[in-house]
Image (cartoon, rainbow, N blue to C red; front, top):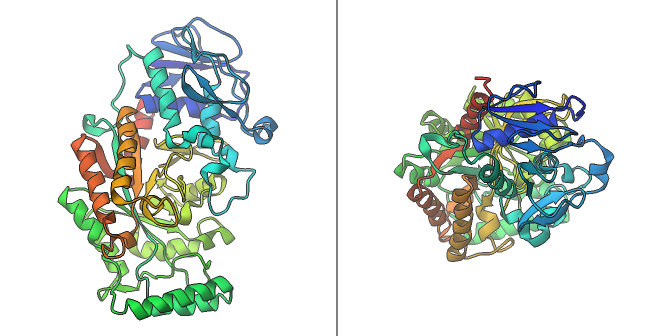
Length: 470
């Protein structure tokens, strides 16, 4: 049992407690918060202004995330004993001093997973690596928080019994997910929709789709069962995110299909209902139009619930447009279990320095929300498309293997997102096979391969168990 004492003078709206809870959960440590320094039944972690002499001591004074110092002056990257860290002031030269962490890890983790650095910038719709301090030395490609946690575990908790992070003793995990952005590249209705935009970009898109109609006549749309068929071979199920088209208005960048649109004569909604009945997770892929009013529009939710009824558990923003202050509170109000919007649109890596799930924080009520955030690390289009990283299949596998290696080393979660359109073997040769290779590689290494609803449920239950709230 880890006993955690917080200095009463700490005034950070509960964020320190939120971060310490996640450190213990990520490490598999049973813990509790106590007010007494004398209660030393187990290891004691002390956060405050003064040193004590417990076996593990964090000398941390956490600054409120609303303080101007964080908003005005971003932190910098430093290296302590070859480990990259984030700090607002230059830290000592070593990671540890005996059993004390020498720098403010609480501020660093909160700054990363709250996405504090994104708040002052208008980067819609993308947050790119070059916007972040993590661009230095390509640190965004490493699970920074997990690297810190490994150092903490070895130094402070090496002799403590720790709960297994993943089910059935699995060493790490892979999360499987798909976005359905396009059903038909050459649907004639798309041309009319683009012309209605009355913009030069809309005209260009209309011409492009007209040419596709000429040269690809007869295509019947993408095979929505392609990825499902692969997953069935391994007795696995994924999360599928769908953008329902609203009847009122749309953003020109939003997908055009409706749930009534057919693939091989069968409406999309019938496929989704079948998948849901067989155990697949059907999620809500937020259209950009949602940002005109509430983050998640009531009429869109109602439209989507035609499919999922009471089983609408997950949400992911189109283009990975992610603003925690908007999304987390709205998603919690709509009773979602998890969000999986935290990732880069044009790069692969760790947008918040972690692949691990974590419970969201409410910016309005300053409290932990029972909404699980699941970071996206790798997307097919980002890795393989010509207008992004433009890797061939072999190069893609080499890169993904490095991420799987890191996932295994740090007992981490690697969430991948493969789009429906990349199942077209003629247009995207080898992309479907890369997806299956990821699954086989994960199973070969004894990883837990699951959909995002399963991962979110597992993490939330584990969080409650280790904090003695179950």
